[in-house]
Length: 70
Image (cartoon, rainbow, N blue to C red; front, side, top):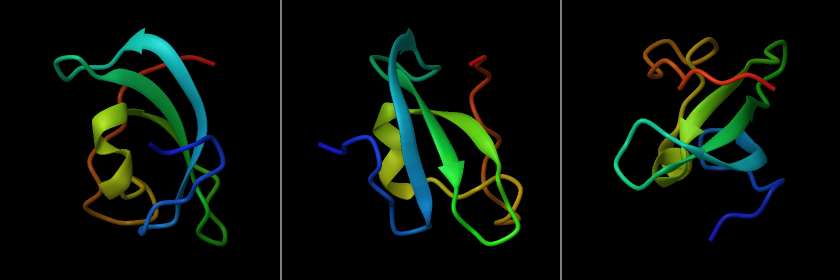
């Protein structure tokens, strides 16, 4: 199970886990940030997708994030 601070294979760091529902059945909303140099994108993601997420800004083709407010 990923922990806050973990970075996936695409350089995306888990910033926070929330109890808010994601937009995928049974998923929770997690806050993710991109670690690519020059990119500081923060976006929401479903908990079940963290391991494969790519930044929607730095990695052209990364899926848009799940809306959230922090």
